[in-house]
Image (tube, rainbow, N blue to C red; front, top):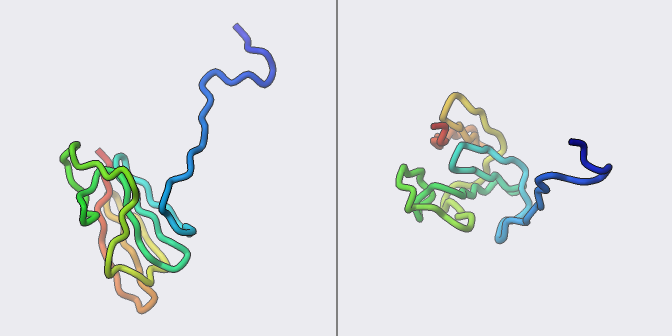
Length: 101
């Protein structure tokens, strides 16, 4: 069965995530995401608690991105397995756990 040209079987409609400033990088886990803004601030979204820490509790699902207070100036990152290493302007390194299972 072929579909007429231009027909999409399961269309995906992009939706803007509210409350996020301009983003430079996205680090995505299975159930949580980390956003690094162009200014180096860090926001999280998904299966995290109100402080932005990853949780295994499916009842803790942040519906809107949460800014991690005190974590700023991030200009680079490295991912190794389920850990995102966030690197600050001064060389400070912060660890964030990603959900991969």
